[in-house]
Image 1 (cartoon, rainbow, N blue to C red):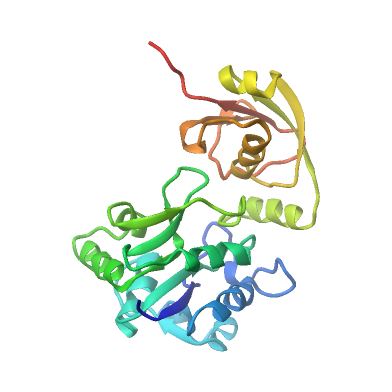
Image 2: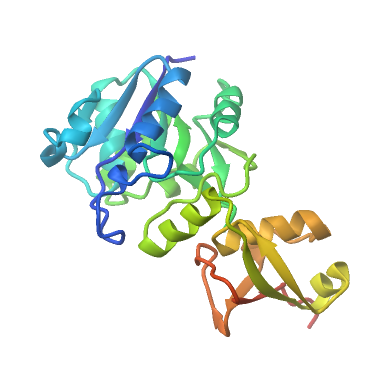
Amino acid sequence: MSPLYGLVLAGGLSSRMGQDKAALTYHGEPQLRNAFDALSPMVERCFISVRNGQKDDPLRAGFPLIVDAVDVDGPAAGLLSAHQAYPDVAWLVLACDLPLLDRITLETLIGARDDQHVAVAYRSEHDGLPEPLCAIWEPAALEALARQVENGRKCPRKLLINSDTLLLSPRTTGALDNINTPEERESVSRRLGGQMIRLNVEYFAQMRELAGQKIETVETAFGTVGPLYEQLKEKYGFPFEASRLRVALNGDFAPWTQPLKNGDHVVFIPPVTGG
């Protein structure tokens, strides 16, 4: 197989966070340093992907850089610029805003690589689709992405959906949660600090039968709805993947990435069967 290089994507605008996500501290150092140090021992060479205007930024300038050389918005720019610089290697691509990422998640990804698939990725805990920003992209996948972008479609996830991608189940709940907003940052900091949240969780239909109760008070260290469901799924043996459920938080439908706080009322709604 091709050599495996590493690429940490750090060229985003961080518009939803309101400050540079790469500079945020979760483990006693900037998250960019944490991501680079986690990835670099596992690959032959490791780089940081940046926009042209970031190459002299003090935080980024001390790392090996690949500057965007492709005129496209979003993470596709970093992926294709890396492929352009080193077209004969595979890339383990990692977003810089994954503070819960652990070593076993990366080791499992690398260990699953073979010569039968153009990419290896994890299924999202939230919708079951490929996670493109903690994935291994072989040269063939990046060549296909370049053709897709030329046709006006710049979404890396769609390329993985429509390609021969090996999809893995996540090894650690929440490890691939992107932290994009101040609320999500507060939640993950609380989890990393070991602080527990008390919630009221309500179940319907088959989920109520398996849980043996309609409503219960749950304590969790997870800061968002998705990992909370995985915790309860493991506890009660719920048969549903998250992508088949709806979730409501305090009376309103909510995304699986919705941050949680003490006293929230969470309702999981399973698919309706019958006619």
